[in-house]
Length: 294
Image 1 (spheres, rainbow, N blue to C red):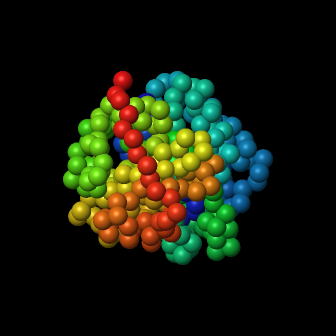
Image 2 (spheres, rainbow, N blue to C red):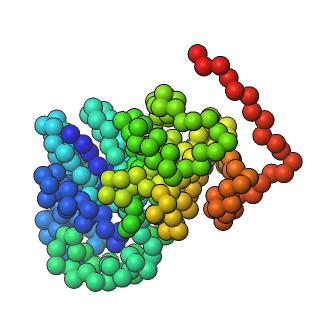
Image 3 (cartoon, one colour):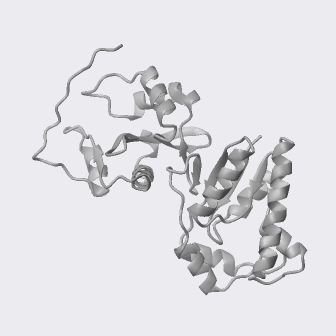
C-alpha cells in the first residue's frame, strides 16, 4: 500500500501522471473532479466549497489507507507547509507518503493550459495571469522532504534505497572517478543510507541508474561527492541537475555553502563543477589520515 502526493503547478502534467496510476488500480482523489461534480465548471470555486471538498477527500483517504488501497492525491501541493501537513496526516495513518514533483516552466505551462477546452474536471481553463502566478509562486520540493521523486521528461530523480547498495557500487565502478581513493565499501554505503536515507540522489531512466550524487550533511557543512553520470548519458545536463538537487537539499537543511572534492587530473569533472559555480580554494590543502576499522 502506498500514498503519493502529486506536486506541480498548473500545466505540469501531474493529472496525466495520476490518471496513469489510476488506470493501474490506484484510487485517485482530486479536488478538480469533486469541484466539477458539484456543478462548478469555471474557476476559482468558492472557498467554503473547496474546504468542504478537502474534508470529504481526507475522509476518503483515511478509509482507503485503512483498507490497504494505493492512493494518489491529485492536488497541486504548492507549498511545503501543505505537503508537511499531509505527510504528518498520512504518517499518523501508519504509512509514508512519497511526493512526486513534475517541474514545468512558465511557457510550457501556458501552452498546455491554453490548449484546454473546459470540457471536464481535468480540462479547466485558466487565465494566463493565473498560470503565471501559479508557476512563478510555486514552492518546489527538495530532497530535504524525503521521500521525493522529481520527474523530468528524460529522467527521474529520487533517493537511493537501502536495497540498492550493490547497484550503486556496480554503477560507480564503471561511471565514477575511482583513482586516488579507497575502494567503495558496501557496509559503509549501507550505513550512510541508514543514517541519512536521502543522502544519495540518483537519476534513473526506465528503472536503470544513470547518475548519482551524494549529499553529506553533518548539521554544519554540506559535502557533495560521488557525482557520476553513465558515459552514454553525459552531455545531457544530468550532472548539472543532480548538483542542483543536492544543493537545494543542503540549503533547505540549513547549509550556507557546499564543498566538493575533485581530483586535480579529472579535467572533465572539474569542468562540470566549475560550470556549476564551484572554484578551488587555493589557500587550503586537504589532509587525510586513514582510520582503523572497528
